[in-house]
Image (tube, rainbow, N blue to C red; front, side, top):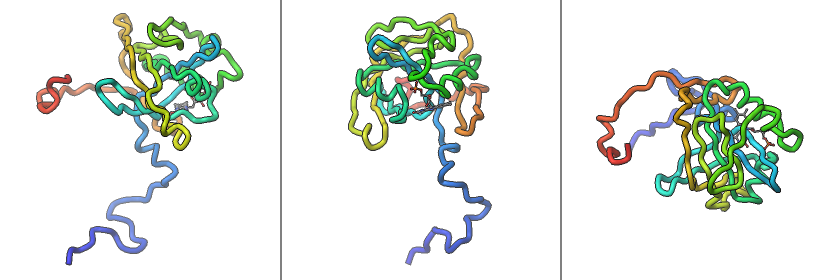
Length: 197
Ligand SMILES: Cc1cc2nc3c(=O)[nH]c(=O)nc-3n(C[C@H](O)[C@H](O)[C@H](O)COP(=O)(O)O)c2cc1C
């Protein structure tokens, strides 16, 4: 009979401390921290978001988790459009502040001195101060009610060639952030994916 590889009883696996399940997201938080703009009845809003993931290459699909209590959630659900703007490290404090107030109470573009730039395919604006902007449409709402999870399709993407800073910020989930560091080039090992590099 095969021997079980599961640890027995209350003994933790060797060299491991138990980590609280309620904090698992601290270990798994994806990056980078991004901004999401929406527009509802001509009024633009912006929120901070770190819970997102790529789901498909072509067309590019992105899964995004927006809490139902957020002003942005209602706008995205209603209009089906948003822009994901990618800030770099010099905007870090502002990015956190944007995620600590609501468009229900304030005009965040005004309060945080952000410059809205008209997008090409969608109503919500790009953010001039961000190095990249991705225009998105909601492609699937099947998981919104259960998980607040929107599946977005990127329909247009822009980068600012004059924006020299490229280091993004990554949330640890506890108010601390990791800033992009050294880049290592392992392209010669990416043999299976060479056509996509
Ligand atoms: C670093 C950081 C990451 C965040 N990530 C998310 C996220 O992934 N999803 C979410 O719903 N809210 C997230 N928030 C919280 C929203 O940005 C916040 O609730 C914001 O006030 C919503 O603004 P709104 O009411 O104008 O939409 C995050 C906040 C911070 C500071």
